Image (cartoon, rainbow, N blue to C red; front, side):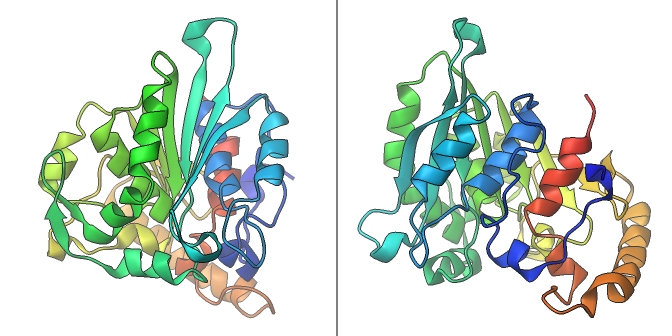
Length: 294
């Protein structure tokens, strides 16, 4: 079956995204966007019932695509690995210009109360660079920021990509304001800061993917002073990716997507009941991105 036809409404794919295999659908032949979509889901692999990284499983999956873990960063002193989680993965190459480093942040784990506290701390606070940012997201990045920046300083000359899903996307965006990457790939990202913060990121190559009705991409509200960074790469209900469609198209697509979801998915046992939540599952980003050309 073509990835374009694939969609999941399974509750497990939303609540525990690292369980299902198939992180990198195209194997070792990954474009940057496909690699980052897979990496943004791979960092959800954790030890049960703990929250710390399942390093062995992550390493095995990275090796299958010619990469290797360079550094695992997690909140210090937290019980059972709760808090913020970040991975730096490397792809070595004999040619220095082709050496690649990917920084991937884990998104919200709803079983981790610290993650939820980060998400709901909506106060805008002054940022190290310019503008103001979401205080909870800044706190989350702060848990790993010092070690992360030190590690990145040791990778001078490497091509650098940042990625993440949900809370992880917010942290990746904040990091781009501290150290500019070669490209930023985010999936299901909330709004992160105000107009001043967004302006400070101009010049950062940015790919912000938004899956159809995904609720997280519509918060925090603009009425509180928040703005998105960059144009959306919108995934429609048919799983095609469209760059910055008009709002009229999006509204119509949402209505049809919700109607279809009710009849095809919402009533099935084990499925999420709302399209707005099901569309946030990382797998629903991996499949359509894997089908993109160019």
